Length: 389
Ligand code: FAD
Image (cartoon, rainbow, N blue to C red; front, side):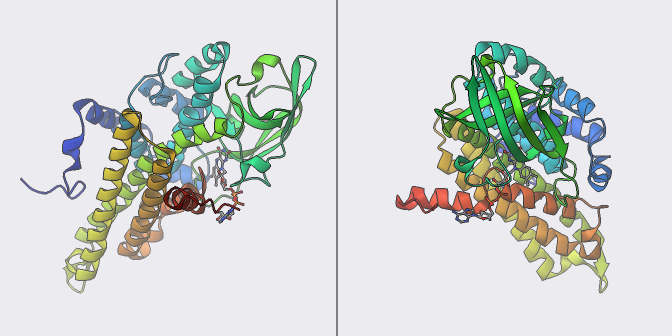
């Protein structure tokens, strides 16, 4: 039996038939609907017909796919992770669309929302008929969300929200925003329909990363919401942090998708490109790079799979998700940078996926908790000392 260069350790043997079926179905949709166009979307800095794309992803069943009921697919955490890997092999922006929808906005409503909120929002969001966003970060509050300035106050039975949210994925295309704000009794979450007076969303332009993803700013100017808009179960930072933990788990897998795509491109290029009369893959230095990529990719996938099995068993700790995000995003970036050198000048061209993945991963390194924050989370877990301030 020959060795599969894209799975040199034979990790495939550890996947169930259902998990492989999820992988195949995401690959099929990606090959037909995304792969042929993604470089153009990235170059243009927009995803045309994002609603049609969201609908296709909904039909595929990947929006909120690890949630149960309310039109969600109710699949395992491992199956969700595998879908994230395949989506991010296309582009981190596509995986971000799915992560923000399922792990942030839908998860917040599913876990912390009222029955009415769940019934109203989850079925159309699972189907891709409604797009969601998740507003936690502000211009002056990123790694330290407790310092947020957005305020929620009571006015009779209503709530009034004032503030700004920055760097919000899906902001200007969202039908609904889950917005976090300081209320009298601490941080609370609110379900804000996009048409609510005083709520505006504008797109952030000139990004050099995640260009095939919509990122924007939310402005809340005396936004009046009914009493039923608050997420009743979420009190304090635990609410948003629980959602972030879900999305980070998807990134542990997703980053390996970007890594695989870059590694695959480098491997193929090394076999085709000739210099000094030989394929560059015949040189020891190139082989060293490719072996290192294979090693990092394989260990990253194994770690993701292990954490997925722990999540399915209900024993995954947030610190372990930090460990996974820290390792796998860093490894994916290293793989992309090394693959970029294998492609020489072609490595900087959008004709190949490598630099697109590399630029995207700079965002992935920062969002859902920066590499520094996850280092501190792991450091605290190891030593018992918090070093955040
Ligand atoms: P800061 O918190 O200002 O950090 C700047 C630097 O200082 C970082 O290197 C950081 O690690 C370091 N630093 C900060 N504190 C410490 C410390 N105590 N010790 C050591 N180093 C420290 N947010 C949302 O709410 N919803 C979204 O949908 C969303 N989507 C995003 C999409 C994109 C493309 C990007 C780029 C960001 C998105 N974000 C989103 C925001 C993201 O989560 C924040 O950018 C991230 O949390 C970091 O915050 P910051 O950018 O304000 O950086």
